[in-house]
Amino acid sequence: SDSDGGALRTMVKIDIESAEWEALESMKDEDLAKVAMLDLQIYLCRDLPHDDRRTALDRRIRLLERLTELFHVVARAPAHTSAFRGVADNEICSDKFPQTVSATYVNKVSLQQEDE
Image 1: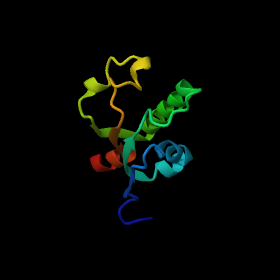
Image 2 (image 1 turned 60 degrees about the vertical axis):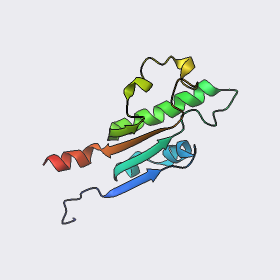
Image 3 (image 1 turned 135 degrees about the horizontal axis):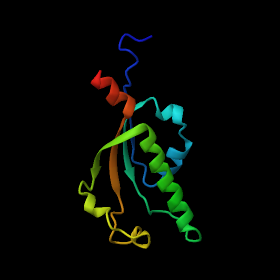
């Protein structure tokens, strides 16, 4: 056992120009659980297949939802949530929606360790 009580110390930054989806899909939950902070640049609509955009977009959204099981979002850009509210599904990949979003996630376990 570590003298620091097993504190999480790993930070992962993912900014790989729309290849983040494959990287996130390849990460197992047990690997993500070891990450204290995840800084992610998201290209939600880039490189969606033309024949099945909705399925691919749904898969990407499920990946982001999966992250919320282990992490809290502590920062994002654009910071104002109005950019995300009231956007209809058919507008998500339009000019009305930010094409690049940055989000910083902190492991829920790491936050609990700080409170103790």
